[in-house]
Image (cartoon, rainbow, N blue to C red; front, side, top):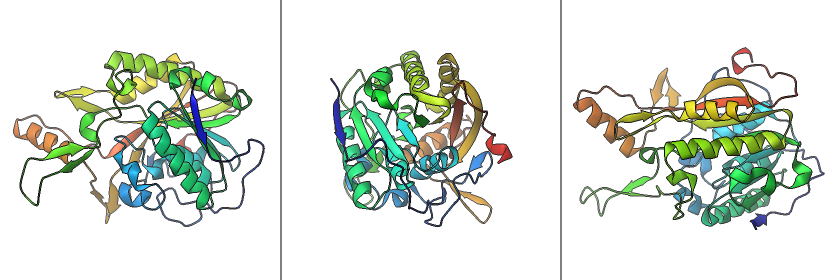
Length: 321
C-alpha cells in the first residue's frame, strides 16, 4: 500500500486568479504560451534564490532538485490554468509546487519517505502562500504509476514533467572543517538508503525502470498530452554516460512520439557572456581532465526531451514559437 500525504484539494474545481511568474524567475506576468525558442533562459537567477522562501530550508538536502524556473517554464508553455500536471519522480515536489503557483493542479510520486514528507511540507507551504492550484504527493514506486495515480485522473493529465537520477558529481554541496583548512567533504548527495532506488541501479536497470515509468505516464496522459524530461550526460570514471539518449529511447519504447529536444540553461547570461553555476566537483573533475590532456567542458544546461502522447493535435515546436 502506498502512503499518501496531501494538502486539501478538489479534483473538479478550476483554479484562477494568480498572475503567472515569468519562466526566467521574475514575478512579472507572462503569457502561458510565450515561447523562448529552443534555448530556455532559466538560469538568470541562481537555484538557491529561486527556492528561497518558496520551499522549506530542509529541501536543500535533496541531491537532485529540478530548477524551479525550468518546471515553471514547461508548465506555463504546455498547459492552461486548471490543467493537471504530474511528476512521477517528484523529489521535494518542485513540479507540483510550481504548478500550484501557476493555477494548475499537481500530483507527484516519490519513492523515498523522507523526500515525500518534505514534498508534502512544500505543498502545504504553497497553499499557505496563496497558490491557487492544488497539490498532493503519493509515496510509492513510479514504475507502477497507473496504480498510484487515482483512476479519476487517468486520461486527464495534460503534462508530465520529471528528471531521472544521474551523476554523483552533479549533486550535493561541499563543506570543510573550518575556513581554508581541512579536507573537503561532500554532503546532500545521496537519494536515500534503499538499494532498490533507481538512483543506485546500473545504467541498464535505470533505462528499463525509466521506460516502465514513461509507459505508465503514457497510460495516464490525456490524448495529445506532453511529457517533458530534463536530463544531462555525466561522466563516470571518465566515461560519458548519455542520459538524454537513454531518455529519448525510453520514451519511444514507451509508445510516445518524440517531439523535440531543447536546452534549458543552468547558467545565467550577463552582457552576452555565460555566468557558470557548476558544482565544486564538476569544476574539479573538468580541471583534472584538462590537466591530463583530456579536453572536457562544463555542462551548463539541461537537455529537455519532450514527447507527445498519441491521439491529439501536434504541438508546435519551440523553435516556431
